Amino acid sequence: MADITVQNLTKYYGDRLILSDLTFDIQPGEKVAILGPNGAGKTTLLHILAGRLEYDGGHVSIGDRKTVGMIDQMPNFPDEVTVEDVLRSAFRAADAVRSDMEILEAEMAAQPENETLLRRYGTLQQKLDALGGYNRDFEVDKVCNGLDIPPARREQPFNQLSGGEKTRVNLARIILEQTDILLLDEPTNHLDMDAVRWLGDYLEGYTGTVVTVSHDRYFLDQCCDRIIEVHDHTVEFYAGSYSYYAVERERRYEQQLREHENRMAEKKRLEGVARIMHEHGTEHLAKRAASIEKRIARMKVTDRPRRDKQMSVSFGDPNYETEDVLKVRGITKSYDGRKILQDVTFNVRNGERVAILGDNGAGKTTLLKILLGEETADDGTIKKGVGLRPAYLPQLVHFANENRNLIDTLIYDKNVTMQTARNRLGAFKFSGEDQLKTVSTLSGGEKSRLRLCELMYDPLNMLILDEPTNHLDLMSREWIEEAVEAFTGTLLFVSHDRYFVERFATRILYLENGEYIDYTGSYEQFLTYRERLKAEKACAAPSSPAEKKQAPKAEKPKPKGGTKNITKRIGVLEREISQLEAQLADLDSHINHNAADPEKLMGLLAEKEEADTELLEKMEEWERLSEELEG
Image (cartoon, rainbow, N blue to C red):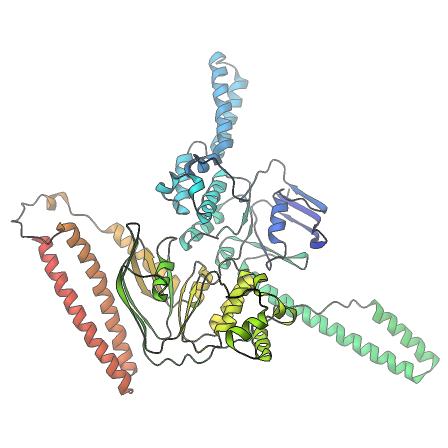
């Protein structure tokens, strides 16, 4: 029997039709994604399946005795309720079973030979075990570790959390409830990449049924085996992952287009034959023409299949000759005594595509704002290349006057003619009446597209993006990516969208606990490298007791701050030495590549000499401090 059955479902909002005559079912254990453009009715359908929204026609049923869990609007709790209390509320069903068992235990004590009571008690034990009642501490810790809910946060009042933190806790609660059917609306919003990967792994092994609305393509590929696409008030089905859906949707479009064109060509041919027969004017041919016209009338003629419009964009030549775009040295930043960034040092070279990654709160956006000059670092320097012309696309785009329509916005902001504004907007898929909309009525994705439309005609050579695909539907994400793909300058971005990161990043700057990893390569390669670092750290053997018991040597004077500060400084030096060695290897490669360009070569040689000197100083300091630590 199906877990979810939908028959002839219809839904209106006022006079506006949202869903029309939908019929489908979802079998036990299926992992289903509901996709479609914003406003198509995805979340409406999910809320109807959850029984939280009325519908106007048809029937929706849930399998017998199947429990449903859904992250709905944020629940309200009294101020004294902690995160831990919210998480433990997932075990209310187990607590009810435990309460029934305690009542039975009292009855069994009075009637020790009553087999009926013993059988009932055994059934309750099995039920409690299935609900996770015997190992709830382990389950809570496992889910909290996976979704990055640290112990300190579990002690906080729930109502003091941010919206994103509340969503994460609520997701953990739903998972802990172990319902038969899990309904998830954008579950990866507010999750960092590690937490998204953990959630995908968890759902892969989840034996229940999952229905999710999501725009995270990597997540969809990881844990969905069926796609329901909502469009034009109806649904279409795809038996496979997101990658299969993307290819199959294109194949279906091409097939429908060929069939439509063949039907229209045949209709045109028959109409021509009938017209010629009528022109000859004989009774016999007139009868044949009438027969052909009846055949034409019976032909099934469908509308031409629609396809998402393709963007036609190309940025101007970045026209940037210098190798170095940014030189960042020793950036340090603290908030309320907590160090967010510690001695961050790196170079960005012309044409690189650098992803700044890390857990929520690691300092990614802080670093971005420091690089943009919107925040001031506590320490460190930033040197920008001569002639650098950066452009910034923030997470939330705002315009100076959002009451203007799109055409006027371009005319005022970019000083162009009306026809030029129309042409540019058309290239970014704003056509017809869309161009007359006021900016205030646009979605977040449309505003990002409009800002890119403004930027692409500026003489830029660096794009800085902060979560460019956040809260966008799949179509909008693809449009933004097409624009970014057309840009040939330097790219620096923060993103939690693994699909976007894997498509564009050629270098990873990973922030973690105030420190950072600077890795050249793809995100997939970085993950392998990071796992190797973790393994090496775990396998590093501590000093043996015998070594610790060696007779102490006469102490030499140590710098102010003791061995703790020396050890910390040595760690910083080792990281800086490693970076300088990588920088020198990179410079050698550029020197070989530019051997025929004297001007560039002189600049590179001077930079190499500066780096050599800095490396020698760092190594001498490292050697001196190591001797002092051992002394």
